[in-house]
Length: 332
Image (tube, rainbow, N blue to C red; front, side, top):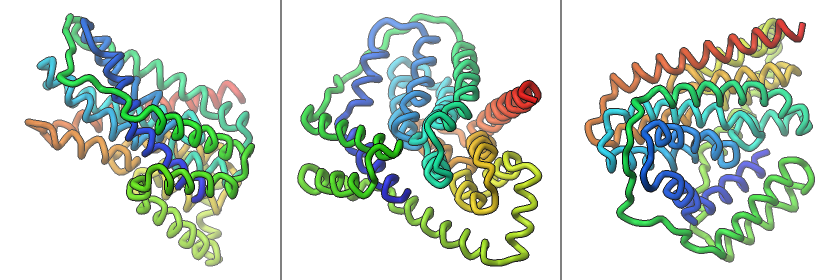
């Protein structure tokens, strides 16, 4: 799993360097637009992109872009609302695929899930999330604006983009167990060494180290009989609730790694850690990334941001928890 995560991090960093996301965003937004369309585009870009390149990368890319766009059109007063929606969008869009966020990749690999199992579990919540985000994005004043960019974004190296795209396809094949990860790793390493050694500096080794430490920690906890018995009983009562609450305290990625050793209920763990990414700012580390990016903008107001963030996350959390409960009643 750590090998797959390393490869995905490196390849996604390579795609980001090519400027493909900036080109996509500019082509979508440039010209005469309605404010509702601009808001919707800024929110749905991280929602869909996070499905392929993880929620943190989507926010690193599109939150600064939102700051730029709103500054150009003189609508900075809407920045908090849009950044908060972008954060929720990235956290919810990323739950749609095994590669969308680290906990999904871990659960998918650890429980040896099939693609059908994963997508059938996450598709309903993804659709509900998309509908909710569209409605929230359209709740702005319907005014006309013109979006212009001082510099036109372009693909920096078509050859490099082609290489990274091919490597990304190989990563996906490895995630879905078509290509062995032991065959993937040397190919990715060779591509990095030959064509872009700078990618080694862009890999989040801190996250990889966090996974490794939690693997060790979970193993030690599992070896302690009384602790293991207590955690197993808690997880047996309600895996989704336990993992969701744990995510609010220690973040959803560590929660997935820690609690996976005490339950065979992958479905509850998957739902709990993904929905649990909503709530507190530390529930998903990607939320801290967007907050940090917002605080760099002119006139940033931390208190107001946290208020809007909390209200929006509580509403989104309530909607998804209610949806899970309703679907559970229907299936029963």
